[in-house]
Length: 93
Image 1 (cartoon, rainbow, N blue to C red):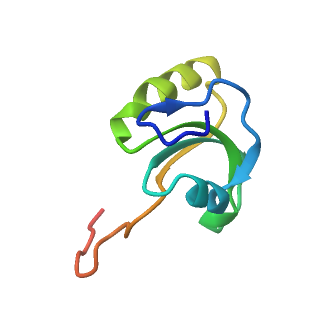
Image 2 (cartoon, rainbow, N blue to C red):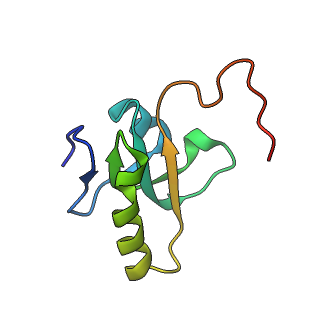
Image 3 (cartoon, one colour):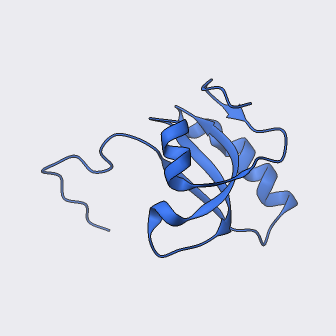
């Protein structure tokens, strides 16, 4: 727990942290977060860390297990580092 190993899954009830705190603690990783406080601004969202990894696919098992046990709880998956959208790239949704 608390290491930067690929596919690291939190096995104990994690402390509540803001997204900004998690971004500093787990740079350049994908994170799965149980939302405990929602705000309009991304960095002010807070929650409990469920899993983190450098490979996004590693979060799938933790997501499905948590969702199965807590179907009504909101989760948030995000990448903590680098440019989200490279300069000069246009995203069309």
